[in-house]
Image (cartoon, rainbow, N blue to C red; front, side, top):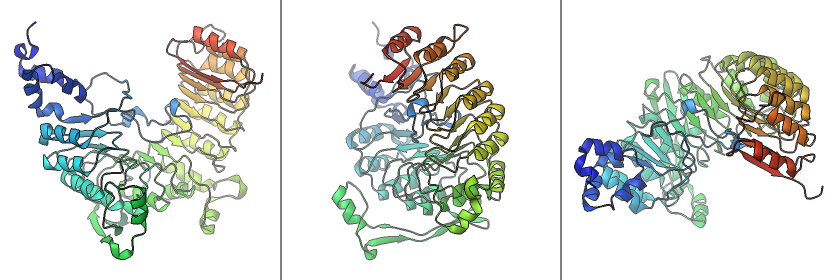
Amino acid sequence: MADPLAVLPADISVMVFRKMSLPEIARCMSVSRGWCYFLRNRAILWANVDMGGAMGNSDTTLDSRPEMGFNHLEADYNSNDSDNDGNNEQDTSVILLYDENLKTIARRAGSAMWRIALRFSPLISDTGIQALLDFRCVNLRHLEIRANRKISNAVLEELIKNSCSRLEYVALSTTEVRDHVIQQLLANAPNLVHLDLSFCRHITADTFPVANGSTFVFSSTTEPESDISEINTDSNQQSDMQTDSQRHDRPMFQVDEKALPRLCTLLLDGCVEVHNAVILRVLNAFGNSLSTLDLSRTKITMWAIHQIASIEHKPLHLEHLLLNGISIRIDNEQHEGMLLNNWLGINQRILENFVAAVPKLRQLKLGGGNNLVTNSLINMVAHSCHSLTSLDVHDSLRLGTQAMLALGEFCTNLTRLNLSGCIGCFDEGIIGLLNGCRTIEALDLSTLNITDECLFAIGSLLYKLERLFLDFCRRITAEGIRRLVDSSDGFGCLVTLRKLSFIQCHKVDYSIVDWCKERLHPNAVITYKFSQRR
């Protein structure tokens, strides 16, 4: 058999190899010396460094139901720079790189490297990042380094400084990056559209500029002079105990409004030092372009609703607002008086201004035991945000039938809905919602006091349902699940359902598990667990 590289033109061979991942290309180099020489000297083949992982088309916002897709932002605004055509399957395998591996790739790619995606990189240190600088890999448009505590801010800042003119996508979640590095990025990366800083514990509100007329001022920052490269827990504690004389002050600086990037996605989930001050800073700087804002599990409180409502340049372009797990406690008594209407919840005028500011809202997360998520709030959202497709209000104890009926009447495009823990919702409200929202694909009704009547409605109405969670719904029976799957017309969710969970449903037994396995699609996942006492 003839050698394909000897038969095919070089450009055709390159097109074939570009469909392969770097590990596959590395294996091809062992075929022969000719193949090794050909592949080693084609920089374009090493320009896209993607080491795989489950984060390829998702953000980092975990949820109470990650299996439902609530931990993934909608596909239409996710970055997808892969050269693969028509392949939407997620590759969950992760290949760990060492510094020497990254150095080899950098040497072969050189200035052709445009994308580096290290979604799980605990072994990469300053040496590996410095190799990117040494071999002039500074034309990066996509920089993704996650789960790393070895890379120092000094080296990271140098890489960003050299690449910032072209950077469009930056993800540094779960790293030790500090305010001053991101300040330099925002001030010098005009093409930046996606910034993910999820679970970065050193990021604060000072990362973002304060509006001052037509200019924006970045606050002065203070960081340890000796950075955090290759540190252990003990040295971390020592660094925190450094005196002021051992710290290095970064002066404040200002940039023109036109110099700021038109940021579309900002993810700050789990940034524990981020507080309410960040809202106005971010919206004043990027409100004209920002479509996705994730502030879940930060120090943000429900005062954020008032700040969004009071923004001057309305309406905003926000389509995805994620505020799961934020605090309801408002320390400032004056703010509390302005926001709250006694025990009824948030002031009606503030709610009206809030929904007026976000008319394009498609995804809203306000779950996490928030007792300010009431019927009036959801009613207002439903009446004004008709394009809403994803809603997560899990553990909202004050929601009831009124809110469900409003969603069913006005938000007919809902595809994902998480009502787990909303114990004020019963059959009447859920069935009323389903009558209007018939395109739901993922539904979580865990712990709700629903009966088989609700399951009959699901089987009859939801012809696109793919994921359903009924955990701890103790009134449903095996007959209800049969009707859910088969329905009265003999179809129900039989064809579409791919995930069904009924953990600790006391009136369901193992016989229905076997029945579901026989009836549902072979790839369908059935999750169950029953109490040993029956």
